[in-house]
Length: 418
Image 1 (spheres, rainbow, N blue to C red):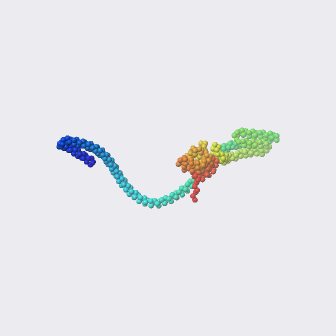
Image 2: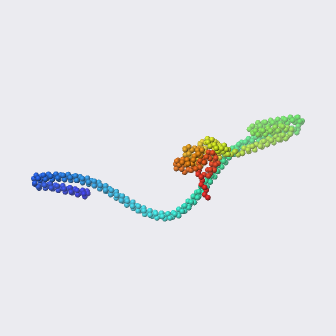
């Protein structure tokens, strides 16, 4: 209990004891009669009033004490919290002091490191400049290598096409040579038969009896020769018409000159010449096929820009130049350098699905479209896309190849450092 409470209760106890003593003295020691009774009654009333006031004061004092106790408890809590804060502040101050000391040491060390790093920085800057020049040189070399690779791929494609044409021609030549070899074998047999018949005719003419008999023998022999030639043609079956005509001419020449050996010799020579000339015709098959790229470009005409009119000639010309402009029946916009599969899908989703539409689009519109698509598309530069798409639409593949050789990822290649 606080000092104020103790004083209050001692005061109240003193007042009560004084009143009790005064009442006892007035009741038992004063004998004043009625006046004393009245005074006693008045005094009792006064004391009751004082007692009631004292009670009220006590209640008020108790209430005040309770309020003061609650305030004291709150003050003690605040003091405890402030004490905890003070302890935390002291600890923080101690930690801050230690940290400041370590920072001072680190600062001193950093200053020394900075002095040593200054020289390293200058060396690093020099090395960085050297690396940048090396990277620039390597970029130019890489660009040149890419151009050479494209040229090599184009040449390889042309070589493959030429090889395919030569293989087809070689197969045809082999087949024709086989046919002509069979024809030569048949003609050789016919020549041998004609030679035997000519020898028989010469023997009969040497031993001939009279001119009429000789003429009949010659006519019979000529008929036999003609019959043999017809049989040879029937046996040959699959031989060429040129060989048949040569044999017929030889027989006709033999029959027309029965009196001399010159006709027979001439027919045999003509037949042999026809057989020997056959391989020359077979060699003619090995002549290279016409330039499919030139014919395809001529058929395309560089003027037919409708996507549906791009037929085999258009695709053959593109393949000869190393391009594939159509996939699944649609224009492949990735032929344009700088346009990847995702950008091509973005263009198609926005209605730009042909080379003509891309060629008709402005660079500003394409840039706005890429920026609206998100940060992954903003790095693309569409500056040369309409030009390349126009070359694709016209089928000018050689110009497109030359244009892309001067680009790096669809962007104009920077000038080479001197």
